[in-house]
Image: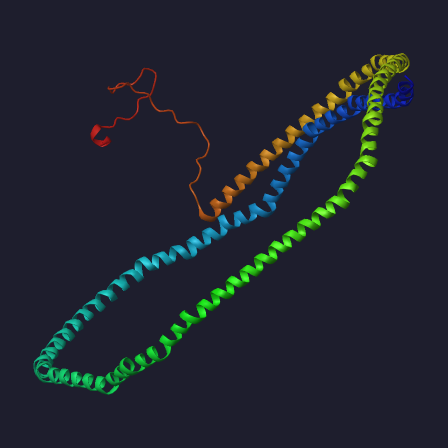
Length: 398
């Protein structure tokens, strides 16, 4: 109980402050933040969005009028007609009426000349080739085939035999019958015998001796390390561990389990109970303050709103806001009509400029519409009371 009383005295102000802050936050959100947010959304949707759309449309129209329409009109009604009718059409006419017939005539003349020259040169070349073939090529081919080829084969065989006798066979015999036997039986065989009979057994013995020494040293080292480890653990580590566990760890564990855990559990339970009791106290205090606020502030404000502000607001809505809104709507309609009229004037001016530059079909003058004269189907008689159309025969109709 003393712990709970102390905790209650400490927690009650904190809980009341917490409830006060929560109440102020909810009231601020309900009375200020939410209406301000709704008002901002309404201003954005009703005021800023139409104004932004209008400004964007006006900026687009001004940008087109300043930067697009003049260049489009210049290109469409000045550059294109001038280039088309001043350059392209004359060039096409010159190419079609002058250059094409001249080019075809020149091609026909050059083709005839080429064919005649080609036929003449071909005939002359065939005659010269026949004379050279029968007077020069045939005798030379017979001499090459009957005399030069056998003599060349014999000379080539003799040169190959002499080259082998002078440059190949002596060195092959020296390498095969002198160098190879001397090196094999004078150097390779003794070296291999010494390696196999002397060096290999000697190396095996040295390796076995080194392995035995290493194994003995390893066994001795493991024994020494085991003895040293056991000595250190037995004489130093075990007593130190026992002393630390007995003099330090055991008292700390007992203190934690027997003192700190019960105290912490009791303090936690005391805080829970005190928080609940402080909630009840805070709720009672809040109810009393709420009753005072309702009696001293809310009722007078409600009476002021219902008796003064509401009639004034209705009067402002009926005599100020609605006439201003109606005038704004009429002004917007007038502005839209002016913009449509300006667009139609610009279109008409563009049509007139184009018709003045390149010409175009004229428009019929307005007048009374023509009413066709009525006739009965399949006969030449007219409907009573209507003028008959002129007679047209089937032959003239086609």
